[in-house]
Length: 285
Image (tube, rainbow, N blue to C red; front, side, top):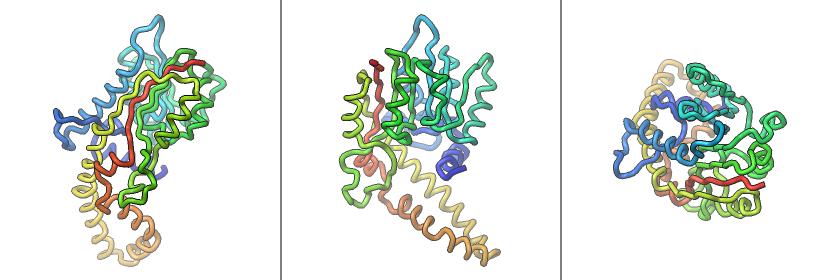
């Protein structure tokens, strides 16, 4: 289990949620940990709103980065056919376990990176390929090479994710506090020359950025006190082990402190360096 997978699984367990993506917030929903499942369901409903409705035959969706399989379960319940992609063994187990409970489910979870999909057996299989907070992890050119082989002519590409703004790399105190994401301007330039026609572009940055304040709340009110208590316990009872641990992970711990406890990781910083969009494209080969 790598550090990113560990972080996702721990977040799911701490917050007792089914999804591993951000939630959507507005003035009608109080920003509290108790409301995280509601905010995440709003995100899921936004994704579902981007999908085609009734068609002559079943609509088949590929959920890339399917996490615990919660979105696939929603899709199946609404009459879609759906498969998932997950490079994480731990999350794949959770997804398969969830989908086994759905009667008649034929959903497949491909345990691999998107770039390693068995494309030869999936040629033009999907009506929709959907990336919910997973597109940032995939090299753009690799995605644009594979998508035309996976999608049927006239099918949809749905991306809901954040991108780097023009402020990325400006050297200000909050710069690079948030990693990941393709450069927004470069992404749009490249997509204009790709066989995809943009049909919907919804900027949801201001509805996503409040999640940062909740993450800070969890770190400061839950994880930090727990970590401090454990540190004191090991220092008192196992001083040699605590010293060795401190030496081995000194740089890693210092990096985590700078990233999460510098005071720069705020909603305003997120809004400066990231732009979060729901994008719907039509595949025009």
